[in-house]
Amino acid sequence: MEIKEIIEKVKGFYSGKDYQGNSIDDLKTRDQVLFGDVTQECTGIVTTCYCSIDVIKEAIEHKANLIICHESAFYNRGANTESMNRNKTLVEKRRLLEEHHIVVWRNHDYIHSGMMNEKNELTDGIFYGLMKVLAWDKYLIAPIRTPMLFELPQTNTEDLCRYLIEKLHLNGIKIIGNRNAVIKKVLIAEHIMGEDDYRKIEMIEDHDIDCVIAMECIDFTVSSYIKDAAELGQSKVILAVGHFNVEEPGMDYLAQILKDRIQIDLPVRFVQSGDMYQFITK
Image 1: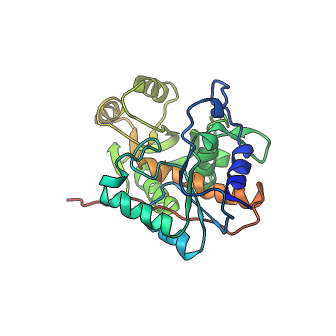
Image 2: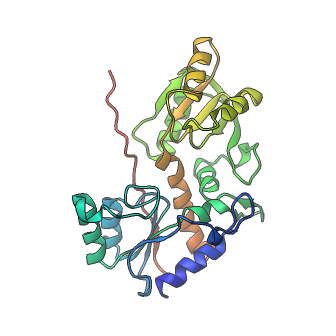
Image 3: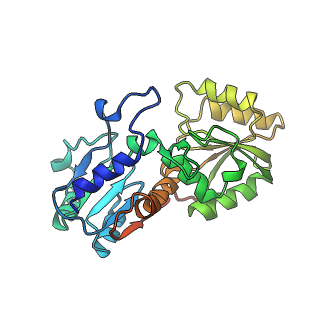
């Protein structure tokens, strides 16, 4: 099967519409072929969050010539590679891909547009995968469309951190707020980047949320609010896990989808791009 046929089959598995009901193909989708010739026969597939050098090497080792990544491969939000010929790292990355005839396709907007789960409910493919990896299905209290809000059996900051570190294969977690918080309600907050963050603060207050699992997390807005709440003795904490670390389980789940539901009859494997954060503490 040609790689372009596989890409179309994968796209067809998802709703292909954004939250306003617009077709992703009618918009300026980020889901582009970032590199390679899609007319070649596929020899195997690797799914990952970020197409790193080590992920490419793993694909080469297993003779896979299609890498499906969730994020951009070339250090920007889109597929722009104008600096390719001036950036030594990009030049070497391109050489590696070219030498081994590897195609890189980004599956971002489609996987977020929603898939039908086992109960025939539309759900975000990335965050549904995260929920599955964490085994939090039975704790979900938010709408299934985007599984974000959970009520867990009572735990605490340290124990929850250790659980996430084990399940997500992390090197550690940055903690903001009460490191001794008693935790039941957990919000997966996606990006905390300043824009409309007051809505997240309102949600934390309205739903009495104890713990926020964050991707990006700036110091002002939600972080400052959580810090103040903790200094007032409230059980509120942010676990700043990191963008790729939060979304990578969804690409692990995609590997299962490719085999079990889309039924791609080729070798398929998930390769974790890995926790990029390392920690030195006092």
